[in-house]
Amino acid sequence: MSFWQVLTSTLAAFFGVQTEQRRERDFSSQSPVPFIVMGIILALCFVLGLILVVKLVLAN
Image (cartoon, rainbow, N blue to C red):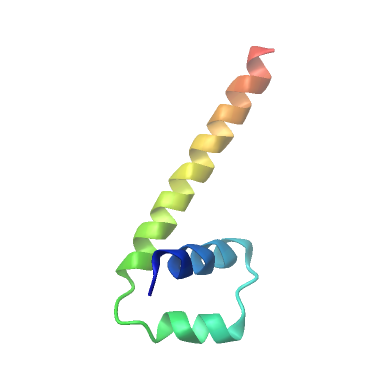
């Protein structure tokens, strides 16, 4: 699977809007490692984004 397919599938899963067709494609892939790595990266970005927003709000 390409980088963009893994990214869009992981983002859709984060928001809970994954289609059945894409879910089946994802589960038929060879390895879950790309999805796990992308999930960790997106979770870290989310947490860092929240920290940044809180710091910006508390600074004003």
